[in-house]
Length: 117
Image (cartoon, rainbow, N blue to C red; front, side, top):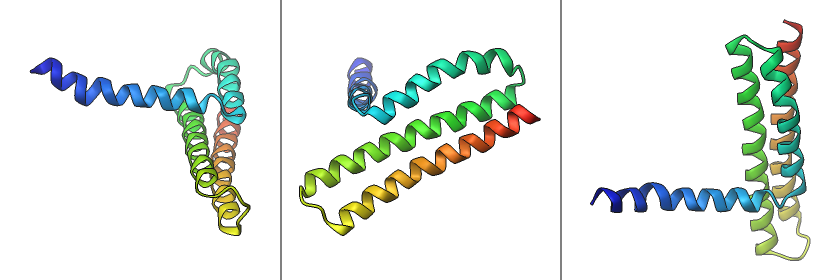
């Protein structure tokens, strides 16, 4: 019984989550953001010994990845719904892209605070 619970409620949803990450890694912007994280996080860990600063930077970075995955999913759904260019489809894609821009701006502000504090 416990094995069935683990399989159905933990491992099966994890399988879908990892499949989603695999699809997200096909997106050029998401790959670039992951690569930048792999490059800069070792520097951040060495440079920022203060737990709060490292936590803020990590939170900001993961918010970027979350926004980018949501952006990818919205773009895919819009492309699935209509292959023609429609003003509402463009608006949905632009709003999702704006969410990524806002999280990047948030991360920039957090970074500036941490570097100059």
